[in-house]
Image 1 (cartoon, rainbow, N blue to C red):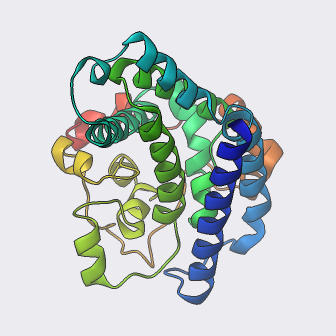
Image 2 (image 1 turned 180 degrees about the vertical axis):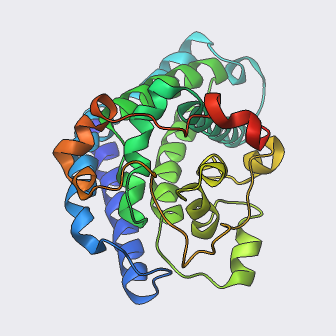
Length: 277
């Protein structure tokens, strides 16, 4: 069971990664300021995270979902609804929790220090969607497991959500060109690369917007949606204002970043009232 889940997840992951990198090569949205020299650090972090949360514990949330189902834990396990509907509802609620979690990592300075490593990438492409500090990955896993128990998400829904989330993270960080009319239609449902790119702006009010990873409706509902960067997509500056040194693209410094770098002015606790959050 563990080997099968790991194989299918890895196959889908590599397939989406190949498609996104190919798309970026042939239809890039922006010129990269540092080029692909960042890939060693980003893919190195992805490998560390794969060992921690992707392939050492690939079935942990699924296993917890099975246990919750057997013991009647969680809201959905105490409501008589068809399995498919339960899975879909569970995925939607998990997506909302990921949105809240993301906002929390921007609101609390100590958590922002972890998440800041993701934002310290001075370019944005599909490898940025793999660049998360291992401690953030562990915290995210704990929150996910707790949410699965609370909601009572079926195991099939948990597995589908894991695949969707990793695939969408690579998609919405992609440095890809999508026609404007297509983007405007897509972002009514899901987070597009142009929508999420705003979130990686060096400007604080843009960094603290567009927290969604998959479904876009949470940003619309909670008032954190920003349609476009003020400088335009081609001219906007990507990253964190006080982390411009190239060393922050090196995997050793990336891992050390939360412990040696200042949080700066970005956490919502310091700035949130100015943007209505």
